[in-house]
Image 1 (tube, protein in one colour):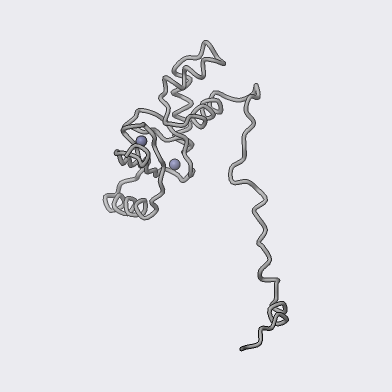
Image 2: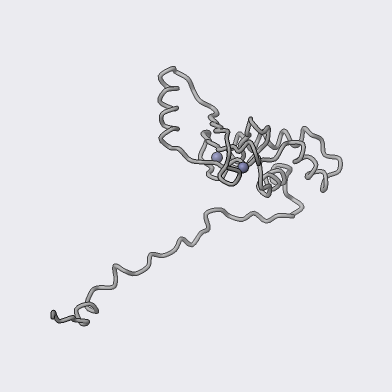
Length: 158
Ligand SMILES: [Zn+2]
Ligand SMILES: [Zn+2]
C-alpha cells in the first residue's frame, strides 16, 4: 500500500488557488426610479424594462399617462425612437412591440418570438452578425439596423 502523505498535499502552494476578486462593480447600474427629474425617455425605458413581454406603444402610453395624464403619443414615439437609436430597446415587427435590449450590443439583434404567448427572447449569434456584415460589405451596403425574428413556439408553449 502506498504511503499517503498529507504533508505533501499541504505543501502545495495555495497562492494560485486564491479566489479571484469578484468584480466590484455590478454589470448594470441600477437607476433610481421615481426622481422628479427623470425625462420621458427614462420613464419610457423603465416601462419597457419592467414589462415581462414586448410592449406596444399604446400600452406604454397608457402606463405613462398614469403619471402624466396629458401626455401625447408623440412623446412616447420620440422617446422610443431615441431609445432604439441608442440600442436600448428593440422593436419586434412581428408583435409591433418593444423590448429592452439585454446585451447593449449595437445594431444587430436576434429574437425568438413565440406566436402563442408573445414572448421574445433575445439571443446572441456573433457568427451570424459577422456573416451578415461580410455579405453587406460585398454589396457596398452600410447596415444601420439588423433585426432577425425567428417566429415559432417557445419551450413553455410547445
Ligand atoms: Zn439587443
Ligand atoms: Zn410561448
